[in-house]
Length: 465
Image 1 (cartoon, one colour):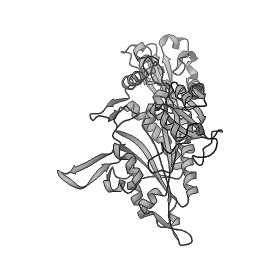
Image 2 (cartoon, one colour):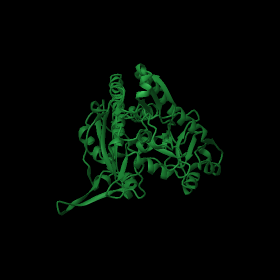
Image 3 (cartoon, helix red, strand yellow):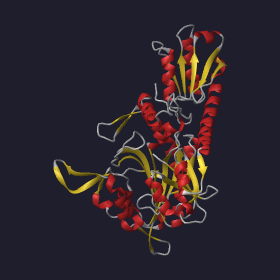
Image 4 (tube, rainbow, N blue to C red):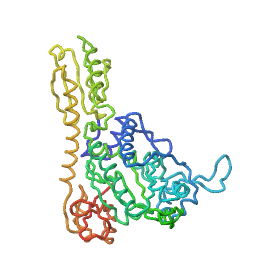
């Protein structure tokens, strides 16, 4: 049994992670072991995000895990922002190192040291690089997937000839990669906006964010895209010859999304029975569940898996009849497989099987000869239903308020929207004292502001993971 969400939401989350066999705590505090089922989800996330990244023109590369400590010190704001989280290696090969090395918390510094070598002319720009890797940020209050000392992610790093080109690319990554993936694959509606100066990435001049609302009304930052201006370009002397023969520093971006998305997936859609996976992401979209191996049911169940696979559906056969049917049904519900097709000799004798949707729990008898088209339709409907349900929750638990005090009260159960001019830096500090943050700044029409001091900006306020 899982702890009910309304009884203890954090405990419910821990129960799901453990009982759905997603992850275990690693041997070093703050680390995690990602189990095969969750890693299969991560592989699908990687594939979907990677395809979108490549569509923007970026190419994948790999850079070292170890970074000389001196590299981080070359950009003052960057090292100050990361200093409390750094893991530093001082000995190697049984000897003290001449210079300590940092286990990468992010790769701006090491990548920019190579950008300085690779960029010579305007013809080398834009330079668009992405890396899939692990990073280490020493976490004081770890929680599996949400905050761990080591996690997996992708990090993009680019160099451009103009500030306008860099800004446009940072927004393109936010919209065409992160928002598109989160909405259309994860089925999580996200609020996009600009971070305040207090909340933006260390060393950036602008941070754009995708903020999702979880089942308990808290926010989760699911992906960010940063304009770095020329801060790192100056620190690492990344210059290029322009068309007139002059020398200029490049303008840069960086952007990333991590295994935190797995935590978001659990909390955005899960219920008291466990996971509910959107079909676009689910490693197993359909499980064909054999009730009893009698009357040709075993052969028909295996045949249905072949039919579904041929139709492009990720299907798996569960013919473990030595395990009770009830136990197996509960286990597949816990794992959030979007559709179950139950095949038993009694129904087959009538020419039918049972289709069960995980998102609604609805059970429907369908002709055994129509399984593939019926399943395909159910998967499409389930994907849309999960997104619609998450949108309704976000709308119902977002309140328009006028003051910081009202925002503090509203943030107990969801998001608050109010004029940024009613908050300001002083109000942001007061909110932070209550464990509440400004998640993002948006224009009234939902579009992205160009600067953080535009008139009539709306602040979205909430508690966050």
